[in-house]
Length: 355
Image 1 (cartoon, helix red, strand yellow):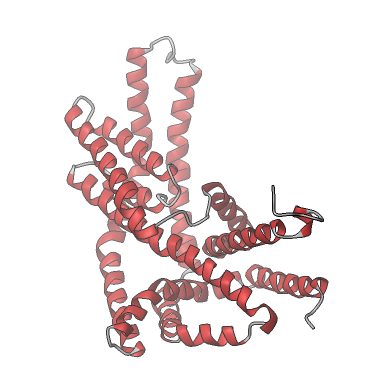
Image 2: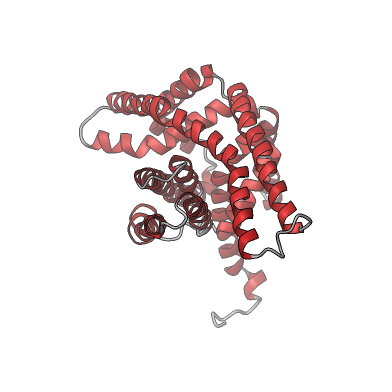
């Protein structure tokens, strides 16, 4: 006879509390292991496919690791320095951009832009704030990144953890499966498959879409001659997992910079607009349908809420686990709703199958 529902709820509640406590107390310590696990999860389908082609798991893992290291060093040597340099230049450029905007508004709307105008003072203050706060933010990010993700973590611990987890991934899944409660094994397996499907669609699929979009925007904008094109492409790709917001933010940023840089040259401004129109068309009609598929059940508002809550509570580690936990809670919530609708509390006594 199975445990009463109250006992089961108590044990699962204790398990969830222990997990949250570990995230709270050991966030910085377990960070490299979470990063390594995320990388292994992302690369596991590639290893499985190489195995189906006849390679051993060990050889497939070694091959993937070597390719990943090569990509990492190319990015570190060619992309990251330029990205940092353009980011700093963009922050320093902000006051000049606002001064140019102020001059244009002064010519077009002199009554709004006199020396005592609130709009004029706001623009001046905003430009200086972006320069001051933006520089401090960049320095803070770099400093915290170096203190939190030191060279040892980046170069040694994360790749080693990812390598061994990727090598033993299938064995670990089998071991966890053996520990499942016999009474609820089928239900837990079903929920796990749905969670994996959601994460696969969102993390692997949407992550690939973000990378492709970021590379496209960065390359296209830099070839078009837009200053800070790499930064704009990186930002647009990074936040493109949020429907509409990523496209709107990246487009506004790129077109705004184009207006300052190419003012009067409407052909160049039009080219920047066309770049984003093409990017959104390809993303909406080709990349997302092929790589992400149908809706994965993560509403943008729920995703933003999860990122905000877990980021506030657990810092950077919370941001890393927010999407998996949001996906898991979403699947469990849908399962609970289905159970509720099939029970007497929803249907009532004497239900005859009619609404």
